[in-house]
Figure 1: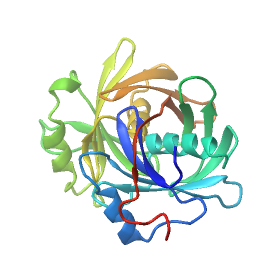
Figure 2: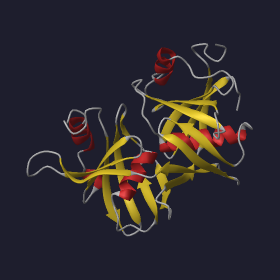
Figure 3: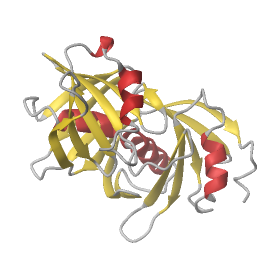
Length: 263
């Protein structure tokens, strides 16, 4: 992959434009926001691969499609891990600096590009949050550095994802908005659909998968989670950290349309 082109990477359905800024440093916010929305139907946002600091081999900065800055992004972290290792910036196991803190990652050798990344120890905010009247669903509120509201349902395919997701963006419980996960228990694990803050419904969400897993305590400590973009493995370690694993694919590249690589 050319270092002078933006890479379009796919991580279980989440697609991101990724800019290698390891030697140049982070873009100014206004330029990053322009990049994140170019064009809106190709990607869920922008990832910047940044230089490391302290014990971190590299850093990650995320912009959603609407230009907002999420604190964490599990599938984005998997993309950053793969690219940083392939470009020689980091070994196969290393630490990434994110807005949610330091995260350990492992890039797996083999024919398929895969990464296993730490999502951290979740913070449970409320297990049975009232989201409306008596007939409204209840939510399991949990944070992986970014907020999640997990709603269990009998059938994710019939869930009112857009209607409920949009409504919860203005709910008083979530003054800064929230990601919303619709979760169905299956014999093999979980099925999940996600409404992402700043994006809308996406084919996958790494921290959303982690939140759905943590809000389903009857699931095995290592489980398969189906999303519309693919299947991810999620695991709870003995120390309480949650790990996410899955493939990463390159699906395109483009010359930098804003001339930002040279800045």
